[in-house]
Structures are given as structure tokens and as C-alpha cells.
Length: 85
Length: 141
Image 1 (spheres, one colour):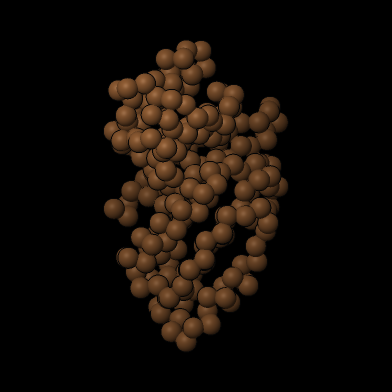
Image 2: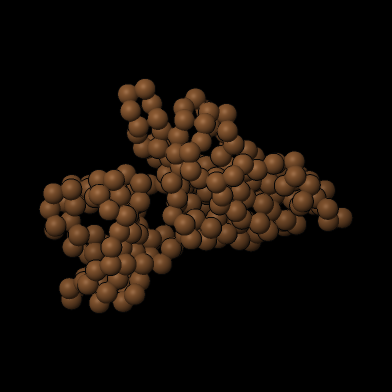
């Protein structure tokens, strides 16, 4: 399935991209598995998305936990903990 | 209810006046966040930001009797002394207005997708999230 992935703030800078559309292999159906899938690209992807890093996510613009399901056409965003206000 | 994510500055007194007109309003509590000592740039997630703030306001309305509420948060480059964010809550009595205003700010700090990047003498740096902000939001649970 095809999804849109977005990155913000320090994560966007580390990865060198604000996001992309990509085709997911079968078996990648949750936020957590998408994160793992992206980290297998190695380099900055592996270090920015590694497990111990505090990375938050949203699915279709709602905060989401790693177990949240993703579906074709979804917009999934990854970002560091927020610091507004 | 008004939620605005904008580049431009805002006028607190005008916003307070706009939610005070209703004859049932006996109290307006407001908060303004200001840039301290360093220049910064605020990034946000367009679309989600407005949505996240609207959800926080909805949650506040479920907890307290509110007559009206305005939340404005700025993004883009900001200089020391500039206003970043304002929350103004109108209700019949002060207790609800004070509580809801603080609740909205505490939740906004941990749930609205904004990120501050500061220009420090040694270079620019993304601001780290503070545990104290998480704790402030937790106490409303």
C-alpha cells in the first residue's frame, strides 16, 4: 500500500527531507513497523529512528502510538517531542 | 471558540473584548507566552496544529462550563520580547476560567505539534522537551 510520510523539526533536518510518498511492503501495517522499516535504510535513518530515540508519531494528524494501524492513503508523521507554548 | 495558528502578532485586549460581550460572562482568564532571551524560530505541522488545539479546547469545554475561548499561537521567526501564544477563557465565574486556561496551556505544551529552534551564541539548537511540561499535563488526568 501507498502512504505519505512526513518528518518535522530535528528529525526532518537529520533525515534531510520533509517527507515522501512510499509503497510499503506487506507486513508493515503499524506506526511502529513503519518506523522500523524506515530505519533499515541505514545511515541517518537508522540513527534518527533507532528505538531508544524519543520519536513521536501522528496518523492523519492525530497523535498515535506505535501499535496504531496504518492504511493505504494515510498521512503518517514522525517528529520529536513537541516544544511549543 | 477561536483557534488561530498565525505568523502575525495578536492583541490580547482585543481578543479578550471579543469573548466578553455575552451577558453571561463574569470572568475572563488569559495567559500570554513571551520569548525570553533568545531569538527563535517556531516550526509547526500545518493542519494538525489547528486540529490538536481544537481538540484540547473541546476537552476543556467538557470539563468546565465555558462561555467562549480563544487560542492563538504564532509560528515563524520570533525575537526576544515578542508574544508567542495566548489563551483567553470566558466563563460565568473565575474558578472555571482560571482552571480551563491553565489546562489548555498545559495540554498545548505537550500535545500541539510545535517545535522551537533557538539561535544561541554557539549556533542554533532545537529546544528539548521538558519533563516538567509532561508532569504539568499529567496532573489533570
